[in-house]
Amino acid sequence: MNITSVRAIQPASPTSPDDWRTWLGQILVIIETDDGLTGYGVGGGGLAGIHVVETVLRHELVGRDATDVEALWDTMYARTLPYGQKGLAIMAISGVDLALWDLRAKRVEKPIAHILSDEIQTTVPAYQTGRPVEQWLTNGTEGYKALKLFIGKEPGENIDDVINRVLTVRKALGPDVTIMADAFMTLDVEQTLRIAEGLESVGLGWIEEPLLPDDLEGYARLRDECPVPIAGGEHEYTAAAFEGLIRERLHTIVQPDVCWCGGLTELIKIYELARQYDVKVRPHRGSEVWALHAICGLDPDPLAESGRPWMTWVKGQPAVKNSEVTLGNGIGFGVWFEEADIEAN
Ligand SMILES: [Mg+2]
Image 1 (cartoon, rainbow, N blue to C red):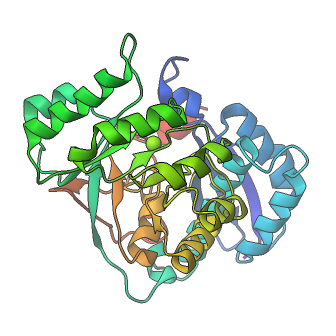
Image 2: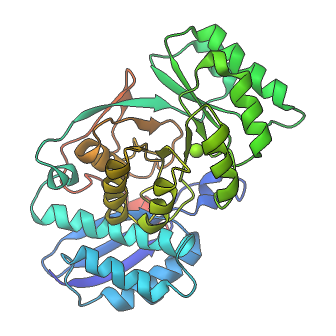
Image 3: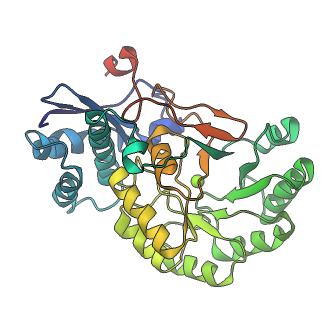
């Protein structure tokens, strides 16, 4: 099962520089092997990520045995290490790694989840994210048992405005829905503590990414002083980096993005670390197929993030219904693509 070709493309999705899907730079990695299989994976890094895949990683991969996924990961990491380690080089590796896992599962004709575990959960709970507050106030919970609100400051807002925004939602939706809060790296320690105090009556499930990912001292203060669990990690890379966060308990809930953190090879290691240290894993974009197989196969306490249309060009994505998401039966990741989305590149 030797690798014969490695390609990466930017799918035909929104191209406006202002569209968040553009600046995330999603790339589709396509790997073919000499036994006629094709593996697909999604990574990041845009054109720079494609450059890494097609000029550096491809050179290392073509001719190698595709089943040797973990050894190929080590090779890719070593080759990109001088300029990599985090960020777009690891995002590029993530797409390749996911495509190799797709091939691994297709070779035995099973969904990925079934090669991660003999006993999988096919339906797992999901929470909703990324919707404006007005929508919750107008439409209610829409069947969701848990939802996540943005708690960064909107233009012209102060911290009290942020607190009041969340209190308004709690009052409108009642006590039965779990509310989590995501600051997307826009607060400091003092602001986070004020919000945690001001929202004590809400019983927040977690506060997500209050600080910049590298503010480890700040996260240590929150670990010691904040009464609300701190979540984070969607902007962290490799299991080695997650080990530091988990071991020091800088996050009590980790949220790796499998398309960015190094792929499924790394997400599996992160799940094992979380098990050892009794930390929860809530993969970023968990209702997408790329992470959902790991959630269904490995997570003892699953919760999948759903919401924004991150990858409408990936066909075979599961639908979320009644606050739950169900894994499909397709082999590998169970995804396919429209020619137009691929040929546009
Ligand atoms: Mg987030």
